[in-house]
Length: 277
Ligand code: ATM
Image (cartoon, rainbow, N blue to C red; front, side):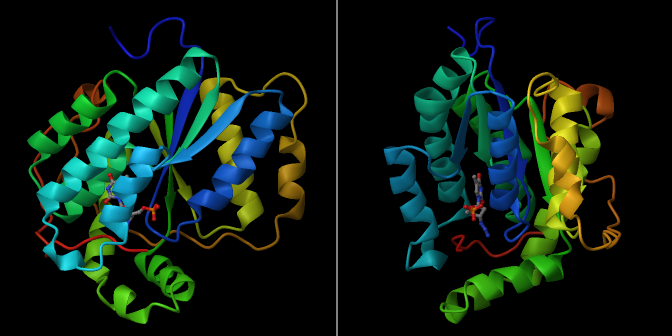
């Protein structure tokens, strides 16, 4: 029996992007907009969101001997946490008409494990599909920031743990960024890219507009969208131009049904290591 069926009137919106892209701040803003439009909202995160998932997160993210975890194990652990989250939280919420906002979902595995860790896209796709069943996001918001900005924000956040952050390398985050941009380009019907260097209020407004336009949410009833731009302060900085080679993108027509199908990659392998934050 499919996890999602015609009675599932809720919507799943996932947020993706590098560390330090501002996802959690924007998820909180969107949740507020939706609640003000009298919609039921649940926010969750990956890895985590369930007791089992949080335990898995602990193994992956806080593993003190990080370098010992191979990329394959990492992929399977993320998928295990995702399978639990889908069945315990997301599918039941969608069935009750709730809007689910997830901080990361399957695209994180495609990009971090498939692109940045250079695992073969075939297994990454199949394992992702096994974990999520037919619960695909209705909309995915990729918040894009240049790698230097992302790294600077991470370092600021982890200033008490310099040794952990030292192990992150710029190439890895560059691959993550390019992976997301490529994925978004190959599936414009599901993924949208928002320039994360803009002022918080501007980003907030753009996300709210996209959610209204793409999913028809909050278009009637009370909303606070009109107030969102009022506090927009700074002029948006341009997104750094990233050259995307043919790489993992599938032909647009094929991509429609499937985000994570095997594709050719042009990005090299990085040393496997445990993800930290
Ligand atoms: P957050 O910091 O967004 O909570 O995610 C934790 C890390 O897990 C993040 N790492 N860095 N750097 C992204 C990573 N991650 C994956 O590598 N694959 C996945 O499938 C998921 C959900 C997260």
